[in-house]
Length: 257
Image (tube, rainbow, N blue to C red; front, top):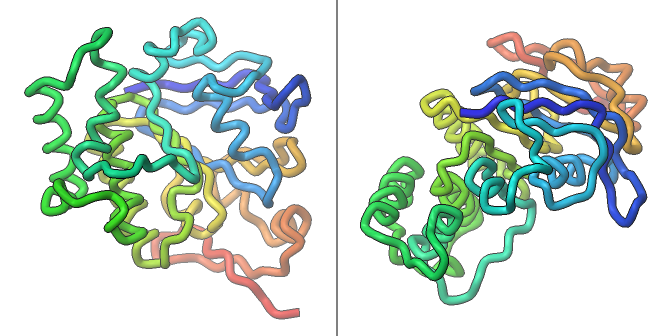
């Protein structure tokens, strides 16, 4: 479990900040979704939290600055699934998931029995145990996304960062993946930060949204407060209607002009 706090965080590349002055606080076990149009700076902010992108301001994990952690300490504390993960050739699902145990191994050490037990448990939770010996390249899109999640969960990190985890998935597989993440974070108390293009899915699963446009935070709060017809029109250039799902969460639907 981990508590995350962002204090006036700006992040970018080669001295040019592409996302600016982000302030947010996530209690343990909560889910924050970063939303916004293409090029808004969503992925850059996520990379800043991992410590792999330069940033100003403070990023605190359980009260400790992330920039003060070593790379190994960050890898143990933060699990990160990029939008387009590098999937090495020739690895099976088990081999790939075992990569998540690397931060816990000593120098030149190999995975032991306990690491294999953790990976087997993760694969079972993700319904991948029957595919444990399958090469990654033979998996469907949904299965591969779950394999990426397995590698991250094998880290046993308290903070889970997911960059567009539903990319390339149909609505059924996207829903199944997010349901799985939600069940796991509720069971384990894991804190989740994700970027999501689908505003309806973001509203259904996240406790709080951060809307970013052109690098600036334009709204922060519960989905019912952040997602309005006016904001979507202004920041996405889209004409929409905001309906309500049976559970009361917003449903964003396009309206023909």
